[in-house]
Amino acid sequence: MMEEKTLKQYAKEAKLRLKNGFWQNYHRDLGEKIEKASEAGVAPSKVKEYYTYVVSENIKNRKDDEEEFYLKVKKILDEEGEISDAIGRLTDKKAFDKMTYAERQKYTLTLSERYLKAVERYREEKALHFAN
Image (cartoon, rainbow, N blue to C red; front, side, top):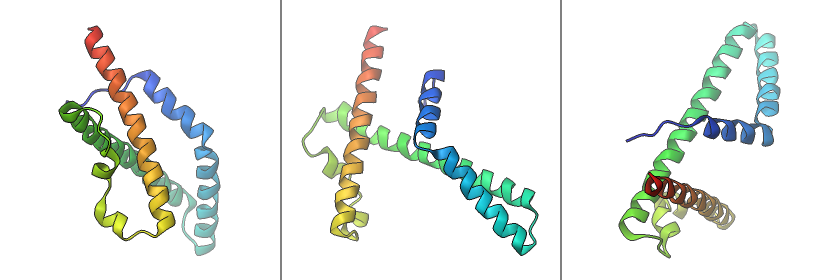
């Protein structure tokens, strides 16, 4: 069952976008794309419409990926609890094998951060569930 996000969760996401400079980058990139389109004779309004759509789809897909990742972590935690090889189980082996050493280090660190966030979310949801 998919749970609806709370206003607080939406606010946290918005704050994170502001903190990471998402909107400054968005406006800079959009300006560059509109300028290139104008030079090529394309209507700026069409570029803006398309770019807005692409960015919103990327945000949506990222959220879907994070939710899918959380569900994997939740399944592991429900079935086996906190295990020592969770990162190994969550690693995409095919992609990992193709990476350079530096890329593997970054991937593992990112995966570890995502795992810790998912575990924290799991604990919070469990605490709320037992409180009801």
